[in-house]
Length: 406
Image (cartoon, rainbow, N blue to C red; front, side, top):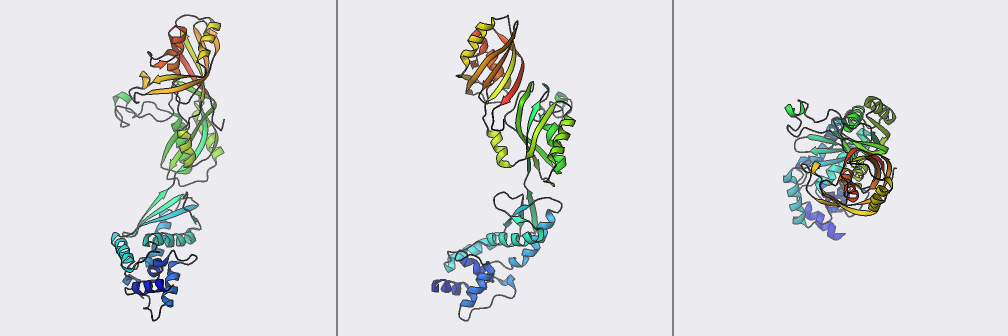
């Protein structure tokens, strides 16, 4: 104890407010504010100097703690009209004050300190809790107040709203997400007819803006568990997705009503089910998932094949690995890599002359069309190569995703 009192005596050779004195011993005890701790330490010294009446003369903070209420009031005003339940405060302190504090710690030999920035964050947060009737939270705050104490500038960072669902896509003419024109990058040009995008509608367009409108946000993003080709339908148990809405003013949504509106306005192109609130962690998990998928693919061979022999040949692929070089059809936008995937199951569902319907279960990321026709040898082995007859893919549907929600 005597060592700490000696340190306090050295420190008080400079004018210090109780906040800045107490912060020199912040890790010594808990349950006290630095202001209270500083007052106790000061009173424990023989004939100590009084705390500055004008805290602007404090050697460390220069009166910054006199502005805590002002910063809290400005912060509260900056999120007026936003619905949220948790928040966090972060401050930017004048670099000169920060450097001066660190030099002072070294000068007096203080080692149990807390920074001015950390205390300001906490003190403003305590006042804000009272003003807002909301809780400060470190893990997943819905609002982060970024307070520049130098210029009284408040920038509220509003955490996005996330909504999870599963969609089925019944059209072969719309992509999953918005597809900006490659020529003009969304500005509008002759290539895209001045629209700025290659397709007028997408699954994102039929879902995201409706969620965004109900949340009164500014921008929507669509995150799917993989994606299907534009000309492929998404059927079965549907594809999991998360809509992200930036800067939402509302967080309590009637998601049953939102889902009903999406399905009514989509007019049979898309159907959504299971809409519920989500979070960033689930969104990331969905984007990174690698669940197997089941497909139905209709193929036309150059001439009819014997059903039994065909089934015998293609089922030899079941449980086997295949090598797929980036398909020719996407080579312009994807790196030319070789991928190794496993065909978990494959069977002939029906045969009608030269047209054959296959049901295939494969690893996530398998190019099913190329599995059928071989893509000029870029997929090996492939169905056309096994049967010795060239083929073309007529239709492709995703009929199941084996994720945990299925």
